[in-house]
Length: 116
Image (cartoon, rainbow, N blue to C red; front, top):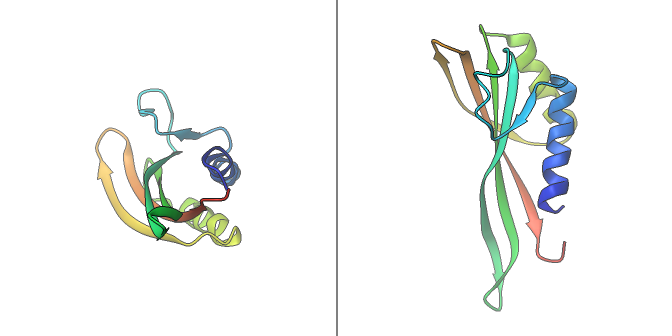
């Protein structure tokens, strides 16, 4: 899956969880009302090589769920959507910010093959 298609796919999954409240890598705290989701591709590293060329890259996408207060129902909805899509995720961190609320950060890894 190429970068554009991969990001569109992730967007469509996240948009099912919080319709019209999903943003890509933008500083949206002043413009958006909580809850909202921000996602971004944070790394793209070659993983497998042949003849000094990469065959496989591992892509890391970070997903941040921002809520006013702890919202286990919305967290479960997001995690269930990722599970149902067959996407493994890791919960990286959860922390409060006075101005915006709870930030819950997930990380997913995807692979890109050279012949795509």
